[in-house]
Image 1: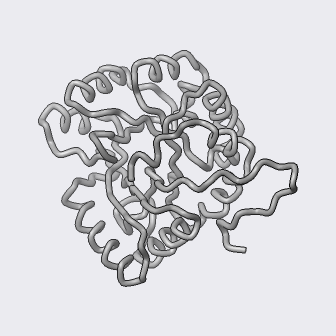
Image 2 (image 1 turned 90 degrees about the vertical axis):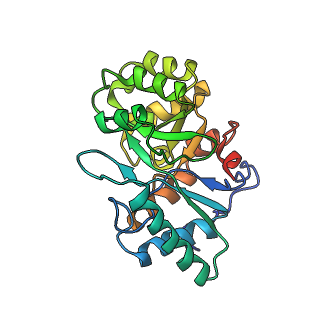
Length: 247
């Protein structure tokens, strides 16, 4: 069986949920962040997702002031190269590029100066923070984003220690209208028990809008398969996820 093949279940088991059509968080553009390192790896990852039933990939390279200083000018030309290679390979998979913006001084500057922001669709913008500490200005930035017409999508909140220890902060984000995106691999325990436990709690509360693979490299394919077979994944798929609205 292929790495994303569906496993046969007993007659008493629930059927596998239908595949999502859109993955909206990944790092498949080669050589511009800590994701795919060359075109061969990028194409292998994309082909695996296509084989699993995805119709569209929205890949989201990092933009971090002190680490990955990407801009539309560094991202979009690489996207075009991948599109060309995909077409030449015979693939029908759609690929679009947004970005995963780290909330830092540079991102605030971009908002204030009305610089181009790469969106998932319809002004949805994927953002992340430090895993350990909540930025003092987090809520101000999210509010400023909405004033500018953007819709914040908060990446992998289940992995943030400052939310794991204070669930009420996550509830505040949800109640304020921030979209929340869980990582698929969290559901298989890839990031450890605390992230899995917090993800399960989010699912129970209905605090999930999007599911993203956050796949970076070929090494992530095996833990993704484990996550797809998990009870947490099947429970999550009972929620009205918004992924396919991004087609």
